[in-house]
Image (cartoon, rainbow, N blue to C red; front, side, top):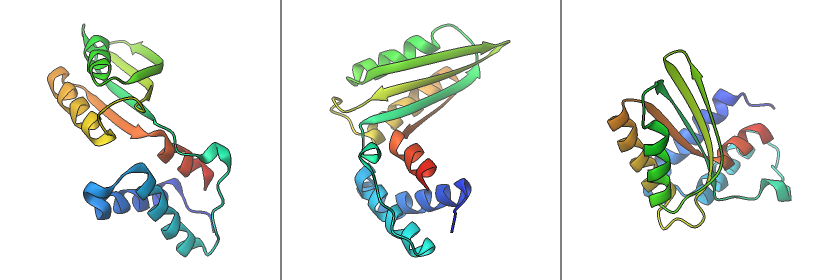
Length: 142
């Protein structure tokens, strides 16, 4: 049985909601795997390339104005996050940005960094989403 991306997303969101404060990447992966296996009736086998990483993907977009990249990267730097890749595109008055970040060395967890990015987004009047790379891997694995 193949699940759609939307079905997997719903399962992940439900699991994160159910786990609450205990929603670490490892716990989410374990519970999502069990739920998907119970739905599909097939065991999910992981290869070495499926191993959990400390990488997260930040996507940001909104009306362009000076200081966006500076504010986002300063906040990440203050959290001791390693920016591994950054791409930005201007389209008229709008901008988009995608950043691959390693949070392994940060004293902050993903939720704390997400909260900080939420505050930065509010100050800049843009949208910022920060998701663990494992979610993307898992969705494409199934």
